[in-house]
Image 1: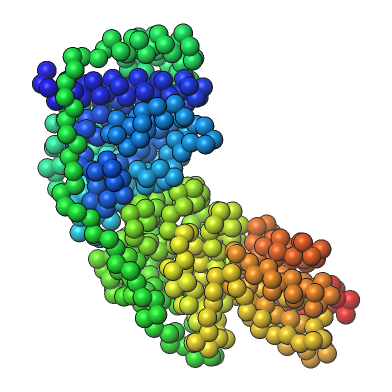
Image 2: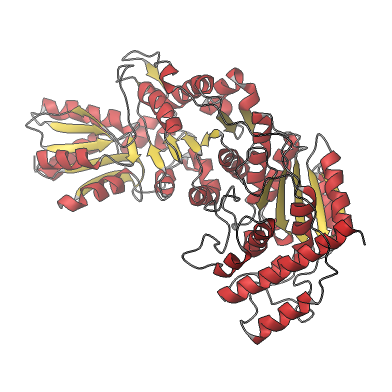
Length: 617
């Protein structure tokens, strides 16, 4: 055994000891999945990857994503071994005051994205690999999956997307330990069957003994030499490796060894597997110093080129603004899921083809790649039909946990899309996005507000979502108007207002029609465009409620739960105001937009009736 192989063997053994010790101290965790991956991680971190252990954020560091996030203890042990923090800190695993959580989150400087919802890490790794191209870096991206994770459809979405982008700088490793949480995995140790699947997807596929350090070293070197396609290393391992009582045994998933005699006996067994002392290989440093991303001057964003009365769909304004934004900020990238000619993100593709990433009909992979890009300094704008974003709801949830700077746009929202029918009508998206902590939720009604809000999204750190509409709507704002996130616009008001009507997007125009009809009957109402659904402009809502004797009516092209009505209700609850909410309250059907708005209770006629009923007019 060579000195380097002996050293890596000892490091793997130490990682096993640390994983057992930390999970036993915590009284919870997943030591057996750490034990199976020990040689994979030791050889990768201390024999293959190039990174500065004192500077995890270095933009030229090779990146590692732990897709099987329940193996977090071995990731933490590897960084302790690298010297980032004292090994004693591992005993704080899962404690409330420690950032060494049960699954990795970016509270830790060496974690790019939160993982633990299986099937997501490989999608994020695609975005991280794409970012190397964006900044012209030679860093490589490695991602470790579990074999049970292959049952997730998003893994195969990622397999397709990685091939489409010819990501030779991406290397995935699957820890094939053959045991899942409740039973053996689908393919067990049938390595040829697993390899055939990855080979069929076009990946450069290798099968190795995952406990053989030399075999792993050769596989990593082969992956590094592979160009034009991603590499997949299938490592055959044993769950619980190193502990005779549990090695390869089912029923041990998520079960730590009991603190005291049981853990002490296991650690002693592992310590006996240490070989003679050997000098640890030097960690390879990045090939060159990192380059910071340039800053952007958003004052150079061109003003919207519309005049009042022009008819333009907000989805088209989104595309126009996105293309302009790409010329102002080189960090901005755009991702699509084969609807770019409907969301108008193809305008960005034409202007900045090197920063446009097609994911085809794979919304989970698109959002996951956006997470990875954002984690490495890009500002990704991903767009598709709003109804299809709901397919990626778990990815969006994890993006919120990661607190990444991802911007999403959902077009063709609501019953106003018309004849395509309920499968295409996003009526849940505002609720989904409002549930993500810290996510701005925006719903412009015209071309000017849509364009201005795209720039606001880019400037604001953190997640943001814009809901855009299919039909053309008239421009009602001057090109110089500003739309700060958290604001609103009062479109009609007087001292005699009998009620406040709060709308957003297409229902703003229904509210304005209702205003005209009520005016003709001698009834004045206040009309507010709540273009910022989250954060909602609570101050303006409370002031309007006070001015209109507590009468507020909301109207939205969305189901009743979680949308504009709920946002306004929360904002005015402290003032004791009860909101009357007009929303879509049943599954709709195909039809003309105007007849659908009326049939499902959100047209001007219904607003007029609601105002009269609420105000006693």
